[in-house]
Amino acid sequence: TEYNPAQNLDPRIEQDAYAIWNLRVALAQMDDKWEVAILGRNLTDEFYYVGSFQATLQNTYVIYPSEPQTYGVTLRARY
Image 1 (cartoon, rainbow, N blue to C red):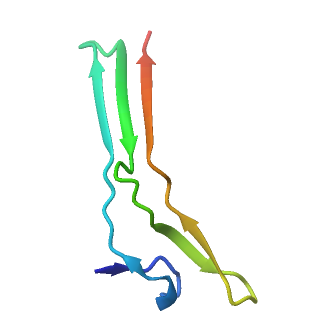
Image 2 (image 1 turned 60 degrees about the vertical axis):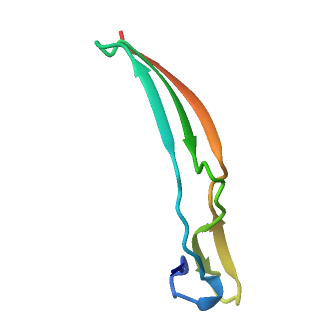
């Protein structure tokens, strides 16, 4: 299976199918006073094109790449 992010479906922009794995695990107090969470996005560090368009009056494409693998921690408090 293939995917084409180009608006005009130009075959030069086709890419293989892909899957993205994200994860979020949280620990919170029962009354929602606080929460601690860890998260990861694009855990397999898959590179793909998000979208593209053909530049006006040029024979070139502007292509938007995917976000890299990222991790984070969130702390939330309600008062």
